[in-house]
Length: 378
Image 1 (cartoon, rainbow, N blue to C red):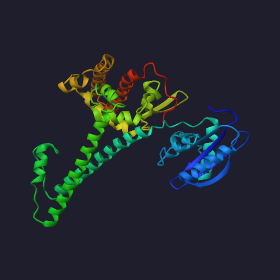
Image 2: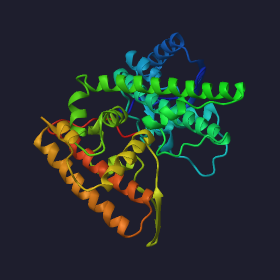
Image 3: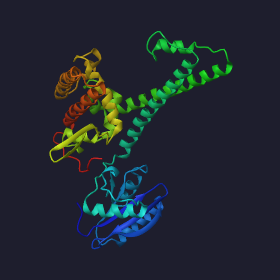
Image 4: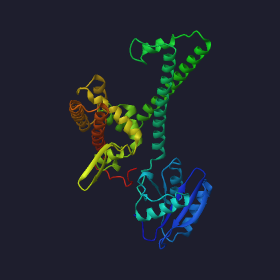
């Protein structure tokens, strides 16, 4: 990947500081360059100093974390190659009990030279903005659930119980709005909980509208249309998958994508004896949750509603064939596992794992004839 005279730089990045270690081409080990402020002006001076001292190409790296991609983008704008390494895939010795900024930076420089780091695929600023919007919508959904729980538990403590059907229907909301309490303080508490729920619901609806508007823009419109042909995948879910994965060319086969999403089983095998546990739950949890939600739809018999037929209008025949095959196969899998008395959550995860394979196949309609991306999986 790099030339023999490359200088490797490990950066231990924090909110306020960056510790820098340099591993020169002929050196046995890295040397410490010191701690610097995490400031664009200081980073620019540091990059200029590194380029001046390096006898050949310069390669830098730091771990993915809360500081995001800003440092990588700045270094690349200064013509300095920078890799972001996946923290969970960095080799760690079992006996290591000391962890400092200095040791972390030195270790990154050494592992970068040995080629032991796995690169995180960096999104573009536009892709990151769309991903942030999707995650803001997910956060609002969690806030809505918490607000609903607080309101229902308050009503339960005061003996106000809704008995006419399911919660959060139009009838239930009408019932909530007519609830009254004798004590002014209890009424004030109820009004506060209701106001909080209404505000969060309005914010959630606004975020979903913005996400749907983004789905109509050129980078996403065509791909969202393909994914919506699959049962259980509508606009919000399709956008979530696209902004979280953002380049399906990274995955050369569906198993690689399943592994990235943490939907493959844990396994420990030695000397012919092995144990297989639950799914790994590594990788992108946002996309994994959406896929598990979509998998519930395959408990129903294969069919095409009027809404599904409208979603499929004008879509490629190859994509429609994959969607039809997914309905048949995943429903059969759900029915067979249910007949074997498997728990519902186990069935759902198994269906979600196979659904990933069909999603990967749908997105190959886009990547046919294109060169694969060079960045590795996160």
